[in-house]
Length: 349
Ligand code: AMP
Ligand code: MG
Image (cartoon, rainbow, N blue to C red; front, top):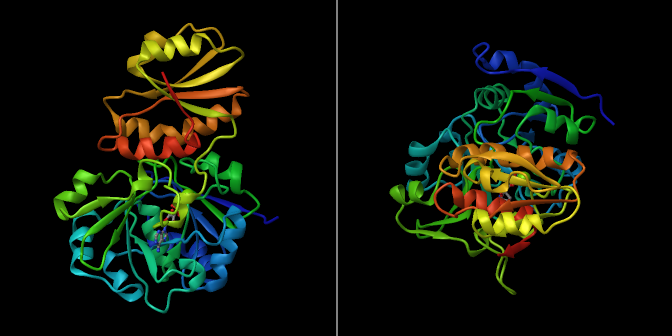
């Protein structure tokens, strides 16, 4: 059990300069672990050039070590030092970085096999959050960081949820307030022929990516389970993910069908409720509503999803439900996370 330091760095209160991150940056360089806020979710960081730091990250999360880590850089041009970049990388970087995009490229030998889980490629991201940027710049090394949750749980989007999972398991937690986006980065792989494969949807949507690279393929696992014998393109796709402890199911039907289904349930249960459905779903005996926002505003749904999955867990309910979202635009990322959080348990109404 470590004596975890919690340091306050709420942006907006003052300009964040790299010098203010000198102490956590030194801890990273010395092989320690620092949790930091990003615009997507909180990350659990260690020195990406130190083979032993990756081992400590896997241990702190309880994560299988065949699931590779994303390396975080302060400026997108630094990808050149750690990967073999291509013209498409620069087109993506100039359009979307700093920001919530992770790009997979062939790795240079300086990246330890413990970070890439032995793959010939490495995932690179340049976050826009001022605290993340200042920490990486101050560290002077790339920071390998998965989401700062215990493996399998929803990613933390506020400091309280980080503390729930990680106090005592890392050296420092930087409190940067709530994460804007609330879902992990979009992950794309640049293929040898300069086409793109979408491995994980996020705030940067397929339409955004197609505007830069029209040759975009969505990996089948984004929308469903792996077919038997299908090759896993992103090792993380094969694990149960983002799941609350309470049994979680998705309802595939309109608001009145959901209301009829929920009215037939017994005990105390919860439902993630869109603003538009609140009328239809209120007043059902035993049903606790967790307002997630308006369907017409998917940014709010993304911002609240993981937060609510964790809060619903604390409410001591016997089951949790959510209507299946429309997989369009940012909805694709919500759909992708929700089907995994529900371990593909979808009730057709
Ligand atoms: P997390 O760090 O929790 O956001 O998860 C990182 C995701 O990136 C996981 O799903 C990994 O499988 C994926 N990933 C990281 N590196 C690679 C890579 N070289 N090739 C394919 N997927 C990767
Ligand atoms: Mg994760």
